[in-house]
Length: 102
Image 1 (cartoon, rainbow, N blue to C red):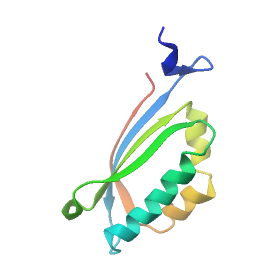
Image 2 (image 1 turned 180 degrees about the horizontal axis):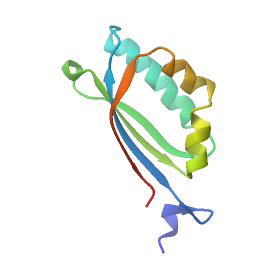
Image 3 (image 1 turned 120 degrees about the vertical axis):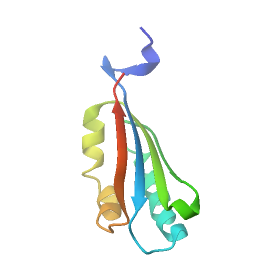
Image 4 (image 1 turned 30 degrees about the horizontal axis):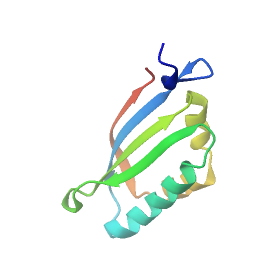
């Protein structure tokens, strides 16, 4: 068994999401919010990696790549102030999402 994929006997959680920008705000302003989210999320217990990356500016989409130590850490992430602050701004909506816990 590859122990690097497991924490405490539980499988890691991988999430890839494509977010469509629905706000009229400038892409740079939106990315400032997502970079703050990225910085704070990477400090969370159970977060292995959280990265927000814009696609081509004309597409107005943001990719999220996330690796979590367990499902509970993902659930706790959505209760955090920094996550709620971005969500309440209605900057994006999920276009598609893939989860894996291999």
